[in-house]
Image (tube, helix red, strand yellow):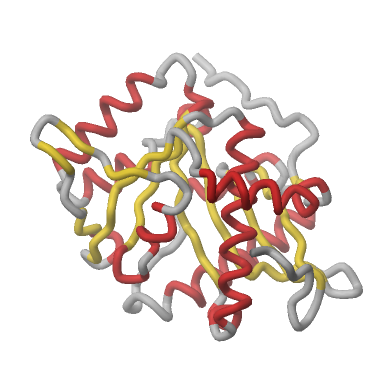
Amino acid sequence: MISKTKSNKGILKLVQLEAPYDSWNQPSTQVLFCKMVGLKLESYLTRYSYGILPFDGSDFVATHLLICEESPNGELTPLTSYKSITLERCEAHNLVFPCLSILQASQAERHTQVITDLLKRYQKNPSEISYDSGFTIHPSARIDRAFCSELKDLLMGFVTLHAIDKGIRCLVGMGMTHVKADQYFLSWGYEPFEDGQGPLPLVKVKSHFWKESQLFRAEKFTEFAMMHAKLVEPFWERRLVISSRDQKIPSIAA
């Protein structure tokens, strides 16, 4: 249950950082983006071997949903991060849908095919499907289990409201099993994929040093997730949105 509005150092603030590529001239984008990269590095290196790269080019054009500590002087320090990128945004920058490139590199042929087929269904409405990834909590926030649980509840509500607000009808994700991320995402409404041969097996992900991951999709949220969305609404209404003045995604030049 969501009850706290403060951490030990400041007030908790939801921050929606939209496509840093479009607002890079804003100092707030540059500062927060660099802090987010630092958060990901510090967090992932506690769970993976040296060499893990928890960011790529898509970070510059994705939406980042952050829960931050806001100090009395207004400084924001990210405690959690979560990345969402639509097929529409990928196409605008000639990027392969990130999930697809991960599966191809991992030689997961069945998984690659089901995602290819799914993307074809959304080709006419590419804003309605997203790949969501990069779920991260700062190591210092994980020490206090109650506070960590609080952050997870806030993030669940934040992501749910963001998807509803943006009209995203299908969220694709991969839950790493060794950190039990798969169990967390199941509670949101994510479901494992199947094909003509039955349920898809876990994927050994090359970019994550062959750690196993469950490929998921969510086309509706659970009552549990919707409950948290309702509880998060006061935070959502006061969230900070950092974006360019013109949020419309331009067409790709011919």
